[in-house]
Image 1 (cartoon, rainbow, N blue to C red):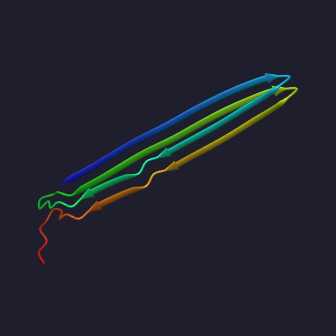
Image 2: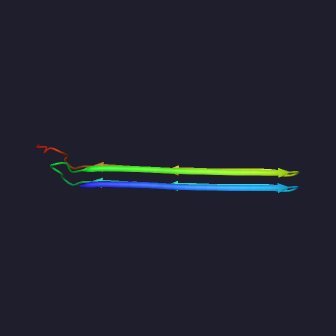
Image 3: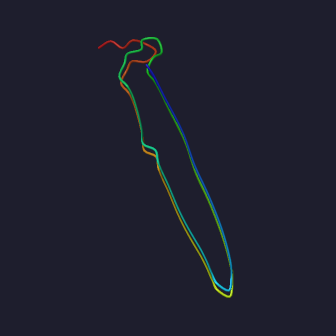
Length: 98
């Protein structure tokens, strides 16, 4: 048995604030949670039991604040949690005798 898991997670955030005689405020929160589980408990005597897991997680944040005669505030929070489990309990390529 073969198991293949591909994840491509993208978060793009942009914030532009301009204030003249006032306040410019920006807040961004980004989170990616990608738990993956691949299980192979089959028996492949001639090349079975292949597990492949690929994850591409991107978070891009941009905040621009401009204030004249006031305040400019920016806050950004980003989090990536990518827990992967690959389990192959099968026989691969050649038979194993016990």
